[in-house]
Image (cartoon, rainbow over all chains, first blue to last red; front, side):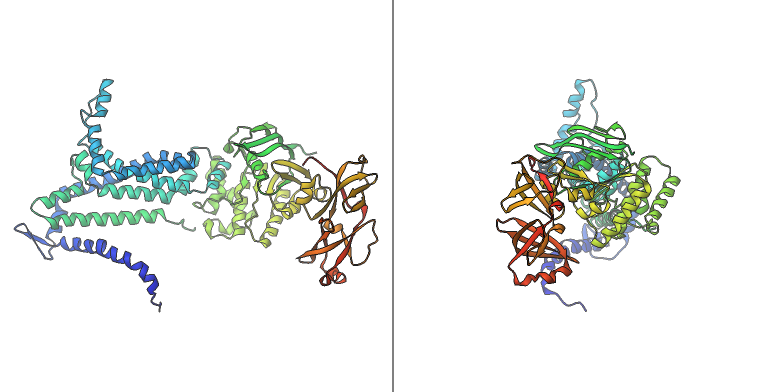
Length: 281
Length: 358
């Protein structure tokens, strides 16, 4: 028998209570609510499969599901690619003080409201906005960037890029330098060393950074709504619309549970992949 | 005669204001086992890194195999290195680690596999080919690192304190593995170490470096018995150093006048010089000793290393004397009763070192 340890429990209790109150509790309630019924715009406690069978049989739900999944995955990949050269520079080329400043500056965007930042992109991307005005000077455009998939992607990248750069930089900077030197010593050219040594050595951190980007984009409502113009709607927009239309909270809960399950599966797979040890042969 | 493989010609390396290596001239012959030895920060590792191309000299030229190597990037050289941290790739298994250099050189997979297998078997770790690096012991990792560096069959192998992380008994084992390998392959080893025992046990020639300069180059015996300067005399072995001025065939010091060993040219009277007496050549006794040079000193401390004991004594002017003797000889000395001892040495067993600038 393991002895009851009151000392350890004292320190664990707050986090257990917190997780119970604000994560497990609401999650359980959301799952329960997905089986409730709505009658005369009022929710009634029940245990019916109606919401599930309705939502899962609708083509628009699945369209939205795959679109959201692809957009989040695509933006995670795009953000990772965009962040990588900057992270490489910060990790290997810049001075210690420059890296510290860069990380500080990357945190600054989080000080301002995401909504405010989104609306400033509105000004930049609009038909009569900054970019089109610039392109107009050399006789190009105007290009429609708002209310398109491109607009949504810009929003997702804006949301996730600073975090991904920070996570990648920290990961790359912690690679044992002698591994890189050993690779060069064994005949690895400057480009090849990235693929043969740096990427495999930094795999865990790079996957975790991309996972964060995916999670943030997957659940984001602002970018696809304001910059993408809900064309087509993503799952978070679908949740809002469903709750507004006829107080269908239980149907919205179905979408929410679908999202949670998807996130769990993807996060679990990514972590498994990130920390996978090489199989002994 | 063997031809020179590596030539350092007035090589310097500066990092901002710090001079890591200054005016280093050194020739290493093909097939030689050369150890570069010195205390931390003496420039030995920087010298090795310049041979690998990981640092570029600030001045002077490095020739390898007759070609000027300045500016040649590391991956275009054939100078594999065994690292102090081993630097094995944790994301590759044992076989893939060994194949890495071949893969980078574009050797086809079947040929890579065959050569890696040969080397793993040669290093007696064939059975671990598919294992993760972290499942290996220190000694096994060491062998993987050696196999990885040697699989491309280079003419020159660089080793940067490769044994410093191993247990004492493994160090001895790996020393014999290394010397045997070097003899069998006939390639040139440049071995950086701060350990005198490693350098003396393995190297054909030893380069002693001190604050960025080459202090002495020579065989183990030569460096041990005939240190070129005060630094080497203090760094290598256990030497007692007496400083004084030449007076005829004797050296006049604060502790008295002592005979000088015969030299090719007799230094002029008044020349500043040092007498270096190795610890194993000093005699010690309770009673007067029958040798030309004697003095008295007080015992300060003693240090046991197995069968040998080093006694530290202090003469009346504070000069420290180190005497090494067999543990079995201690009985006659009766150390516990303290007091003064007689020290002495035969004139020709001391080494005369003319005072230099340092």
